Image (tube, rainbow, N blue to C red; front, side, top):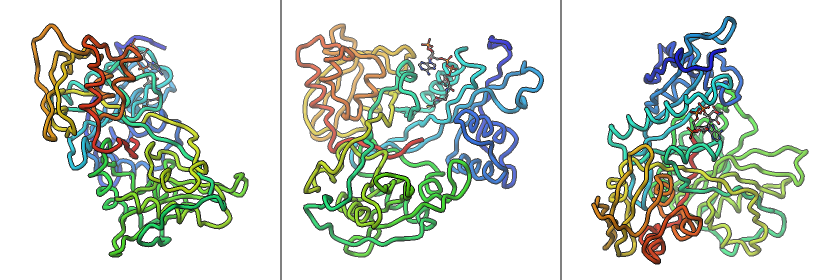
Length: 430
Ligand SMILES: CC(C)(COP(=O)(O)OP(=O)(O)OC[C@H]1O[C@@H](n2cnc3c(N)ncnc32)[C@H](O)[C@@H]1OP(=O)(O)O)[C@@H](O)C(=O)NCCC(=O)NCCS
């Protein structure tokens, strides 16, 4: 087995269909993607469904092909590494969205690790994204130790929670409106309007890719089958409009206590979310509800008579951001406080390098490039990505040495200026 990169060909192409089926390049790429994420080999129907999602999202695919594969190894049109990128919106402040360059499907075959394949795919792709004018790139990571070196920092977090729904579950308020159980197969049609309303007001939220409706409803699972255990309910506001939904499944009779597992819960307003929790708690024969990926600042905590029925079982990074154009990114978002602070960004890849001054006031702000030798703060590119939305605390970053302070209390000033208008959170995984 060769360990050089000489026999490797890097190809980037748009996801495409040939009739209803993936075209040859997309079909080989999908096989490699499924292999990398430890999934089953796709059937032709599943491959067709996945290719249709990729095409709907306008995904750009990179495959790395080894022209020196040994006899009997996988077909040469199945790449040894995969990478995908596409555009979705990122809400940077309530009501303000920018186009984000999303990165997904990063896999390198076990036999081809640590030869710099990821580094080449990533730097080539980020270069194309910067050239195309994207201010930020974003990803969700299956391992947290890989992406800082490429300038990505964690900007939003999620909580996995378990809620006891026996007699101790009681809300302090009676949410308006009402809930109904619906056919989960109707969720792909109902969910987008609810998500869009949530997304518009939620700093940190990322637009959802094409396969979301099928995934959350169980119509097509990651293995390509239908999950007939999936159930769904919606919430109607006082005018009868759907303003929230939940999809869930029973964890099985062997689960102790008997548990309802939420797949997705999205609400346009917090009161709809509370009503859906009230609905989940009222399901007979279960006394616990779990949810992976909830907001660290969920209104449920405030609305429970006994907040200890809710426990956090895991805290995880969700959206990793990489600033490609600091001036465009920081000028786009809103600011709640006035002031000024300067900082230098050290960026190994060059995109965000330089010294800048952030000046904010009257709800908006501007970032300008400065020549000054003296700056208040200095940070690496990944720290800039982590701090951008205001969800990570600059003072804590300074305490850890990730933000280097040259002017006393400058980290506090940066924290005050970047404070988000609402707690940051994203419920999209890609
Ligand atoms: C993670 C993965 C994509 C890395 O690919 P690779 O081609 O071996 O990575 P490279 O050789 O280009 O290494 C790039 C850098 O990342 C580091 N790195 C790679 N994988 C790493 C890991 N799992 N943990 C920590 N660092 C890692 C390398 O040491 C190297 O560092 P350096 O350039 O600063 O010296 C590959 O191991 C993989 O496919 N894993 C399984 C799927 C997965 O986890 N994908 C991520 C989805 S978000």
